[in-house]
Structure formats: structure tokens, C-alpha cells
Length: 486
Image 1 (cartoon, rainbow, N blue to C red):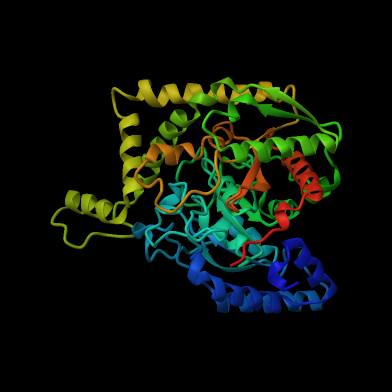
Image 2 (cartoon, rainbow, N blue to C red):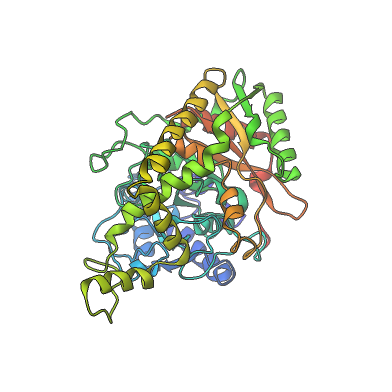
């Protein structure tokens, strides 16, 4: 098998046995990127010389018996809303074009400290707002399984790069499904950790009470290795949890025997793709065969999740994006004749249509006379949604659901129908509203050859259960081993 066909942990084992070097793995990844990137378009920029230097340093550490762990020497890539010292970070927006951070995001710094080798920055929906990566100011990403379809969003570049075997793992962010939905569309594994499990320091903010950094890779074991490195308290993030970080890799062999797994009836709705429903229900039956007990549960406030999310997320976006005014950094309009005109022109030129729409919606929800009717009411419903989950977890150890109502849709298919676009995140939004961990992994393929994702939702800070369930399912199936024929 070629090096780029290995999982992260498989490559790590080869590096540890001296069967290949980090430099060889890095060159193989760069060659693969050169071969497929003109069609996939997952990357916004590459940093090959920096990567080669880091790979050589990793090989030197191994030669001296000083490897830093399973990620040392492994080529990875980063979503472009994670600040990277000395490397342009644009969030796929013209507003931040040319912005070069003087520091690394905490998650990035921890990857580097573990010896991982970043190869570059990945395309995304502008400022993480979207479900298809069509909102990027620099063009869409193409799904490696069907280049005419979306890879999902907003972490579309992160999922596509893993699926296309360009890198061994990536980091993305998930505000309402932006790791899990692209993972499902691209046939890879993706984890949205519990809110507070991974520091948000250095992440360009979209919705601060919902954003969370997480990994994408080819196997659940790879996710466990990555989370073990990036998780943990960070004093620079006041929302970062002080809870100790478990040994996630140790959870992989636990299996599912005796676990109670819930199927929320509200996640199997009229209008969802029957192939998706069939694949997810068959995955539940497989987990039953492995020793779990599957029961039906109810999450009655799920029907309000989309409306709740798009009030809260846009309100927070309106507040967070007020800083982009052309004064300190980023784009600045050239022809303005007054300060007010400069503000208006800068934001009109710098932001794309989807970002502008969300800013206006959020500003309206926060405005005098509407705050109580919209934003405050949405916060109350958010509490009810979280309460639904906590009550379900009194009966279950985890929940099973589809990641998305259907497989990847065609590029351009939903651009003019924002409601249908928003509904593609119907099954992922509640996880963020309730601050829970969520895992997506492949569970089948539609007749058109497109991947289908199984979502596993867990109790707060119980990522270990998700890894145990996900790996048990992977060991019993081969969906995660399949690769697109690019």
C-alpha cells in the first residue's frame, strides 16, 4: 500500500518501526496533493518548505529515541479559520485576505508540539458560514467521490483533503455540524468534541457559544489520537474546561456489549433519503449484534432546533464580526470620503452574500424591540433542547442518528434555496445547542456511490464512549476503508 493510503495510526506504526521516514511521508503527501488538488481544490495555500523542515526535525528526534507520540512526523492540514503564525489566515473571506497572524491557535500549537507536520491551510465556507463550501470567496471545494457535488461545509476542505488521501488528518471547526456533515458527505470520520473540551483561542469566531475545534481523519482511532493531543484546559480561553483529559486511545477496545443506545424518533423524519435511513438503521442492528441494546427515545424540542440555531448563531456572528471595520487589520475600502463611508464600503466589499445575510438577521434579532421576542426566546428553547438530551441520557449511554438527511448534493443545487440548505444540518444543530460531543463515521453508500454518515451523540465529556462505539462498528464493517477513485 502507498503511504498516502495509510491511516494516521498505521503511518505512526511504520514510522515507529523505521519502515519509512516523516520526510518520505511528507513528500508522498505533497505529491498526492499535486496530483489531485487541481480537481478537488481543498487547499487555499501550501507551506511545503516549512513542512519539509518539520519532517526532517521529526526524523532526527526519532533517530535519537525522542519521538513525541503517535502524531510525531505525520502530515496534517488546518482549516483556514485557525490562526497560524506567519501563514496567511483568511477564513476564505476577502475581508481577511492578507492577514498573517503573529501566533498559533492553541489547537495548532499543540499539534506542532506533538510533532505533527502541517502542510497548509484548507478551504471553507466564508467565516465558517455555510453547509457546502460554496460560500468561499476563493471558489468551491469538490467532493472526491463525485467532483460535481459538494463536500459539505463549512469544513469542506478539511473533509475533502482526508477523503482524497492528500493528508492523514485535518482540523476543522463545528458550529452547527461543520465537521460532522462534511465527514458524512466525504466518507471519513469526524468529531465535534464537547464544548470546552478543546480551546477556542486563536479560532476566528463565528458563534462563540457554539464553535468547537475538532479532528477529521480516516478512522475513529485516528480521531482519538488527535483529540488526546489538542484537548485540555487553556487559561487563554475562559470557556475551556479544566476537566482532565482521559486516555482516549485506551477506550478503543472497550466494545459496546451492555451499552444502551437510543434512536431518537425525531431524527427519522418524512422527506429524508430512504437510503440514509436504511443505512443508519442497519448500523444500529449491527451494533445490536455486537452486544448493544437499542431503544427508541424522544427529543421533542428537535423541531425547534433550526429556528433556534439560526437566531442564536447569527446574533453571535453579528456581534463577533463587528470588529471587521477596516481599521486594525484585514480589508479596507480605498475610496471612502468619511469614516462612516469607509465602514460601509469595507464591509460591503469584504463580506460575501451569505455572511451579510447572517449579520443582518442577527442584528435584527438583537435590536431593541425584538431582543425578547427572538434572541431571549431562542435561549430558553436552547435550554429545553439540552434538557431533552439529558433526560434521554438517563436511559441511554449514547444516541444513534443520521448525520445528514441525504448524501452530498450537487454543487449549485441549493444555492438559491437557503431553507433547504439550512435543513441539511437538521440532525447536527442540536448537538451544538446542547454542548454535546458528536461523532460521524461512514455507515454505507447510496446507489449513486455517495457515502452515508452515522452520527453518534454522547453525554457531555464522554468522548470515550463515542470512540468505543465507533471503533466497534468500524471493526465489524469496511465502509471506512473505501476510497474514492480520483
